[in-house]
Length: 307
Image (cartoon, rainbow, N blue to C red; front, side):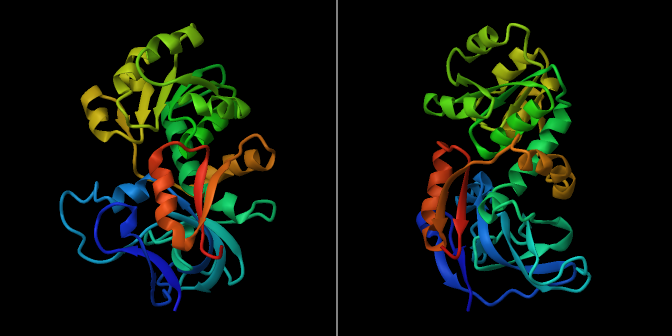
């Protein structure tokens, strides 16, 4: 039987277990993917901790993992676009990508080009779609200045590079140890914390046109002050703060296929890249989520079931 990461109770990373599970069968509009790599995202450990459960206990064992890359292994009814053996990447249909086999909605998959590795492909879906969606909401254009909180994480990195490719200037908050890393991808780093507003104003005397909050650690008041209006701020990490400060929160995913239309050519041309922070085997999924939860990333954490 194939193996998958599951947890039967909310808690620390140690609740994650490798379990043998039945081979999933694709339903209407689904395909089964033999997983080559699975990306790790902040939502994975937030779900694992029960932070989104509303206080209710876990009613059944749950998998983990929002995004994957791999090879189509079986095609369900209505998924005729795909054939077995095709390399693909995209979202998991059941948030169970950390597994040897997983299901995906056919319409939410993208063909993996030969030049793109499986690890890099698995790191792209969530960050690409989220970065594309938030930049569209902020309407970031050539000549503008964008501030990104948590610029060294997956979404921040891609959003910053896409904005740069559009001709915007990008400033990103990060710990000092990540500053050289951000400069390598064209993002001007600034230390987060007390005094942030003054530091940003010194770097951008022309003003800040838009702010993307990918951190969720209390930066929204400063962000509104810097832009002069709540309309110029979008958060993907602080819905409570969004309501308090009148800024926009976005959490509902859009079309990956639409996002990669702009982003993949930039990746191929070397203008946008998603560095891989670290790679873990399936049986070290707890370490992978612990690394993600630390918040001290330089790119994306990836799980490789075959490693």
